[in-house]
Length: 567
Ligand SMILES: Nc1ncnc2c1ncn2[C@@H]1O[C@H](COP(=O)(O)OP(=O)(O)OC[C@H]2O[C@@H]([n+]3cccc(C(=O)O)c3)[C@H](O)[C@@H]2O)[C@@H](O)[C@H]1O
Ligand SMILES: Nc1ncnc2c1ncn2[C@@H]1O[C@H](COP(=O)(O)OP(=O)(O)OP(=O)(O)O)[C@@H](O)[C@H]1O
Ligand SMILES: NC(=O)CC[C@H](N)C(=O)O
Image (tube, rainbow, N blue to C red; front, side, top):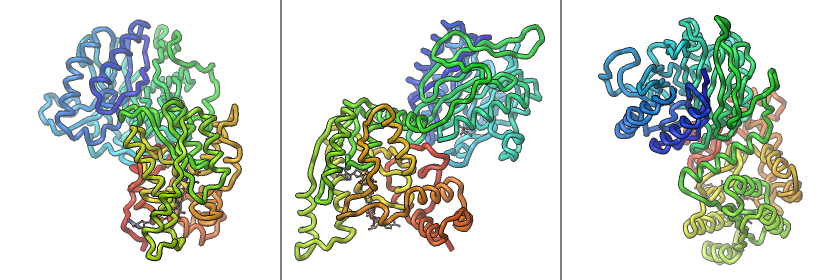
């Protein structure tokens, strides 16, 4: 049997567009001799559709698409598609109760629905919210296709192997049950979002599951950016011995073909076929080395898809001559093409000549449009108007007004000319609130909001890997907000290497102050950093959505109260 793994980038809610994509890929796979085409989790709606799933009209449109478009397509080739399904649980007969919703893998053959497996394990932690919408599967049964019994699983269903994790989050292990009931292979349809380190983890886990159950695993993952989440794809097939047979590219759509079968009554074998959009590692070859280039590609895809899926073509960035705005602009140029990016320099009395020229050189190196709009006149007018005797007092309110004037200018250009404003704050700053509300936080997409400052430098070096795009002076000068004379970030913050380690321990690893101090940090410093993180929740709640690239991002993966105190 020839299987095609269709790594698609659906647009959430665009049922018509997604079904068209499914059709195009099915036709292409069919021409390449496929007998079965497998699509990702909820491929018909895109993942995560969130509260669209609460709308009856939306679910009706899904039902129509399945009955009128997907089912007829299966006259040419068998399909496994992910879709939300209303009604009774699988095997419970008539669809009487329309209030129950399942996250299903549906097998269509010969023009009709031939099998269904609902998702058993509904992730409800971190960014996931599935118990809000779905009921878990009541049963797990392999679905026959020709001579094979398919063990259909949906994303989280394969993430509960007690031997791999040394613990079980849920009582059921769907893979174990399906294999015990005669599944010849495990087929997993996924919408598994990327974070740094996830690809290696996933590969390792899938190989271990294949070895444990002596069954091949075919894993088909969504790609694309959907709001904060970036899906990498990296679909793959592993044979029963745990060897990776084929691996789709990360962060790109793709169609991977493989041959599956049995010689006499021997074990099921998998073999890569032909050459359509796929990579085949040599037998036993190393897993892909997940370095900073993956974060770079994730962010490029995240920016590109956010704009494309929200109807924008071009973006603008305030260029200070600092590292954050330089990296943001470089990512935007890679995502949208330099012709679709505008850099705006807005010098004030505190901007150093070096920063001004660095901003201009960066724009030239990237080939993006560049404008300089000095803010001195507006700043002076503000200071005069807001102080009784007309002379400034140099407090924080006056400092911040510079950031706010810049935010207004960027939003003015956005309104008038149709650019999306990209904000530049990194995760370290967003963590401790080192950013100005309605100032540098003004904008539509926070590109670096989940990138710690130390990783921003790694990205900058990666961007400069072939030639100097970000001027070297930007990489070596001490970070500064340039809101008062001789200001540097380290006046208000510990060195970023220290800050980032404390933040990772507190936010990603959820360690206590005592546990973090025990790693060798000054307990008073740790308490102060934690206090600032907790206190800055109000700012983050008003921030633009940020692209997620770590295991724990702010936003929907970390829902903290604002008005609270540790007691
Ligand atoms: N719990 C709460 N819920 C809702 N609102 C709350 C609040 N607590 C304070 N506020 C409000 O927030 C205001 C304070 O926040 P905000 O106005 O933003 O100002 P604030 O946090 O006081 O100052 C901004 C800080 O960020 C630094 N900065 C600014 C710009 C760029 C960079 C950079 O390097 O990238 C750094 C700057 O040097 C300064 O240290 C208060 O005046 C109050 O109105
Ligand atoms: N002179 C400026 N011209 C244009 N934009 C500016 C200027 N100063 C600040 N900004 C915008 O405000 C953001 C926050 O700037 P700031 O320099 O205060 O902090 P930062 O975190 O050190 O960022 P960067 O590394 O980009 O300088 C910048 O990234 C930039 O988008
Ligand atoms: N859609 C899902 O079920 C995703 C959950 C899964 N553990 C993942 O992140 O890959």
